[in-house]
Length: 182
Ligand SMILES: Cc1cc2nc3c(=O)[nH]c(=O)nc-3n(C[C@H](O)[C@H](O)[C@H](O)COP(=O)(O)O)c2cc1C
Image 1 (cartoon, rainbow, N blue to C red):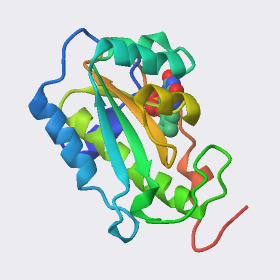
Image 2 (cartoon, rainbow, N blue to C red):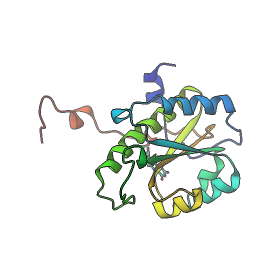
Image 3 (tube, rainbow, N blue to C red):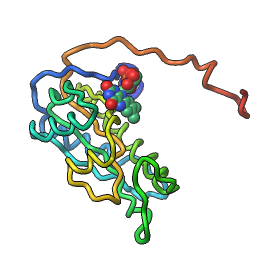
Image 4 (cartoon, rainbow, N blue to C red):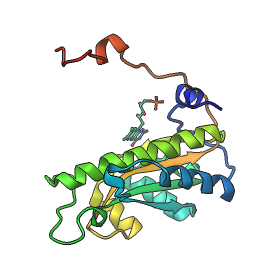
């Protein structure tokens, strides 16, 4: 499949079949994240593979109790390890953090996450990004230390629905030439 096809046919899917994701497919997803570009090649992304139903239910619970999530056989929590960019010193890593390095890490790990999503699409897997949780609660469930930031949880599996494309702004509204045109 060409990248363009994966980009065009991807949808956020919220109904999944009860079919597990094979280990070799999971390896390809994680490899896609590993190969993504990151600022100064700092590679702050860490990826927690979540397959156990009990864990999926707990993650769904702290994600605004989005119960549908737990149907999906595989979650990948995409975590920024700020120590990859800030080896020592104080870190304030929560939703209110002014820390510049946190923003850089979120950018990098987001790119890695989208690599996973597009690789999943190519493998015939569907996905949905999840960002509706607090750092405090998701860290508690996944036993993540306070100097890490959970950028997203990716919910992955075989689609049991085929949503239509959601609307996007036209290029004429989002593309400027040479300078900002407001
Ligand atoms: C960072 C991020 C967080 C998201 N969090 C959620 C979420 O918590 N629950 C949910 O149902 N969808 C979530 N979504 C999916 C968006 O609602 C979806 O991408 C958007 O409506 C466009 O639809 P599409 O992905 O099918 O094109 C999230 C998407 C992104 C990129």
